[in-house]
Image (tube, rainbow, N blue to C red; front, top):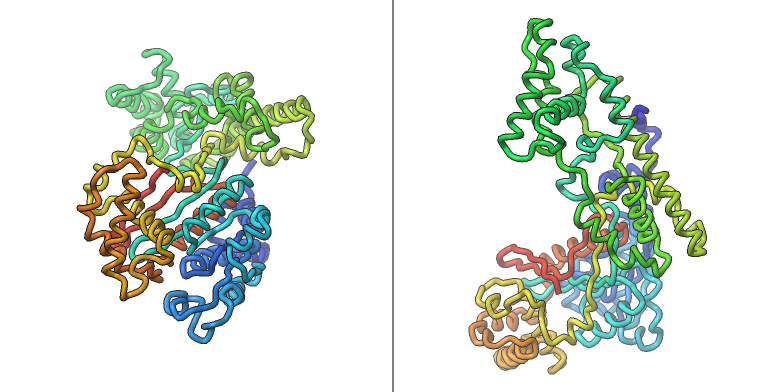
Length: 546
């Protein structure tokens, strides 16, 4: 059936007006997930408040700030939400009140305790949050928090702004994404494997019986299908693959499909918009219909095969796997959408309905498999709802799954990823691995000395020597030899920073971290995996897998 007409201004809700731009990104269901979320920020630093700002504005459900510090002069100088009149007041309380003013729909709370106090007195406190965001924590505190959240399966986002360097680290044991929104997603047209409804529709259209006007308003998918029939008769069942074959195929579209029509109408076919669209689509519309490798990996995962726990994603994935092996004949459920194209309304709507009806049938098969799986395992039928199955089927070709690593184990670890040659990386002056290791070194310095290098002006020269020792020991612990002597300039720079949190860097890292939190909450778009490094001097970024 035809698409619904757009709503008039009077029908659009106030919420839709308020969040219009973001609803176009993650839809109503994504917004609902965001509004149901409860996040925790540990320490209302400049970076922390920038993250919360970018979550409060789009309408996060609620937030809680955990911070036992008082507002300092340093806070007033680099934190947009704190000024000199607030110095000496509880930082958690002041930041909460000001952040709540940004959006009346959002609830805010605060606790005037440190992270270490909460972990000691109430270890389960953080288990109730959708995501925990940590800023301004020492390595020891971060280690304890990471272990706690990893054990309780709560996502953790650690953000750091240190001088001109920033970093984000995501800790999540498993994160499954249905709507990954890939940049170059191909249309699901099935021209190489037409389903019965599509074949019947295509066979009912006779190009030779059309006049020129009818031909020029025929959907280009019909032209591709008819040209593919001619191709298969001459060259076999495989679609054109290389440049030469595709040029031959394009000539079939341009010169053969409308040959009789052109003679009758005394006009030239090949210049029509639908013919041009068909020729342009040859490179994308004739791709082989198959299960993408990233999706096949999910369907073959032990979680999908064994179904050890009641998780809706894996239950539906198992149902899709059974569909592929049975009703789907080796392919995923049909997406059911069509691209825009030159066509008269009647035939476009008819073709659109053909795809929608088949997509509905495929989703119904998957839904039945879901019900069977739930019944066999004695799980409640409410564990999975039908709308989730339909959404899963529609986006089944873009499924993604990330399995992360524990930050505490990374901090304890004695080696870096095997595929990374650290000694070679250290030879590059602005290597992201170098900045990662420098940030690790300043944390090691704090653990050993109780303050960050260069924090006290009188100790800068002494701290440079100490930091150099920390950096060398870190490299040795990680199995790397050399490199530290050639990094004096970088070590001097880290000391010169004195752990300063520059607002410009904090704002950038805060915005990036907020995006990652939204990805985790909405389960849309692919979050970084798993460490992000920002060098504001060269304005470059990099993602490291640790």
